[in-house]
Image (cartoon, rainbow, N blue to C red; front, side, top):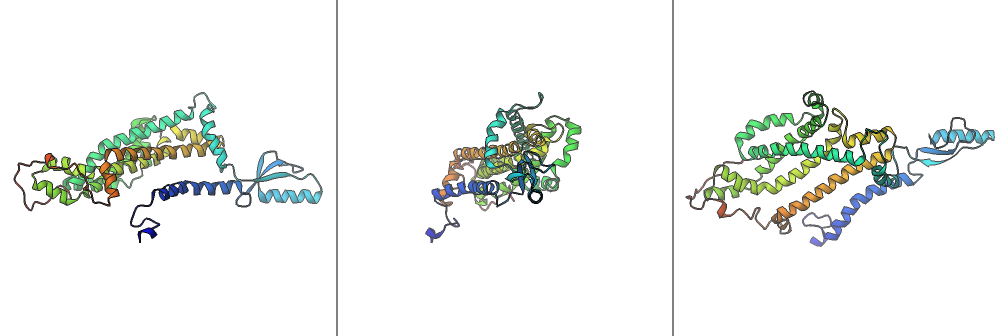
Length: 352
């Protein structure tokens, strides 16, 4: 039965098949994009004029709709005048892959048009700094509150109803208030990232903490653990891998707020570069900049996943053994109080 499990319903896929599927996940969209860009009969709604012929309103390097070009070509044929010449083309806003690939190099080498405009690497650095600070402040406050809400019913009932209400409010709606309070520079941008991730962070981390196996808590209480010691020595270690995964997901969430955040106040960062290049109609640079955001985020997540494998090696082993290993092997008697009398029948009191 296992040999026919091609979709990986019950077991992990073979390594070669996993690598193949990862490659296809990127190759298939690239092939579709290439087909649309290079196959004339598939989708080329315009004609790029190379010779206007006798058509007075045609100019060299002009893009006109195919219907208009065919109509003017028919008129020139009927009149016996010079024929316009051109080839099928896509709109300017859809450059082919090779131009976007070239823009990855030329965008970094091309100086800004105006003296006060930043280079691309400066814009990227500015955006990374904004994301880092916004997510750092969100995590410094959101992770502890999320753990408290997940561990103690008191904090959950006190804080989560308002957070549930607030998380439905769109972060960009606070842009005007952030500018009025924090000014027009980077502070309101960081605040938008904070607002967009903090409330989600509290709820998601709180939910991960609630998933701790009650048997671990019962065993810890039987051995004498209670209060904050039970949270710090059992609940947090048992949920730390899930919290780490949540943080990786929420970091990606923070990136989705970047473009909105950087138009608040004074436009800056990669958003400024994208808008400027769109204004100059350099859409190959626009696509390259958008792709750079995805590449930075993707490789950041891969790096964090690699770091997680080093920090939590038992998690990787537990996946290979299909749950035969304990959730957190470092929970041992030494972290509890072995001299305390056993509490038979004690029930966990720190999680819902």
